Image 1 (spheres, one colour):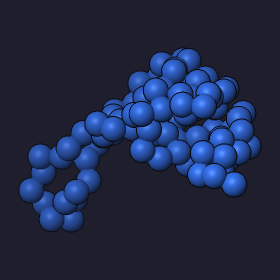
Image 2 (cartoon, helix red, strand yellow; image 1 turned 90 degrees about the horizontal axis):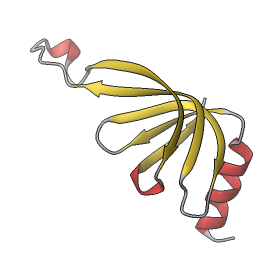
Image 3 (cartoon, one colour; image 1 turned 90 degrees about the vertical axis):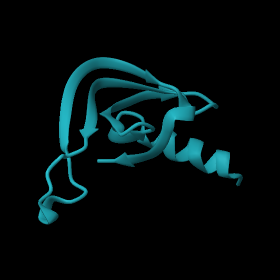
Image 4 (cartoon, helix red, strand yellow; image 1 turned 135 degrees about the vertical axis):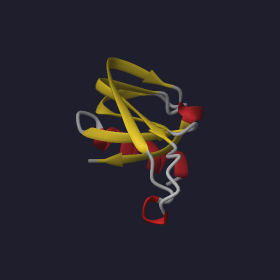
Length: 89
């Protein structure tokens, strides 16, 4: 089976499940997959956008960690070329 076939199969199995989709630009979207197409454009319902903000803290114990800002967005259409990873939660 081709890589596209495996990805489509995994997305099909994830329809109706809650996922975390990591996007370019330090953004993520959490929600339920409603559907997708062959370009891996994804429709998510009950979506929450999570924006990772860099910390200006100089404390070494917090190095690399930032705060997250969450915003409820309802339904979302995510273009496949912006997706980095998809994780089923």
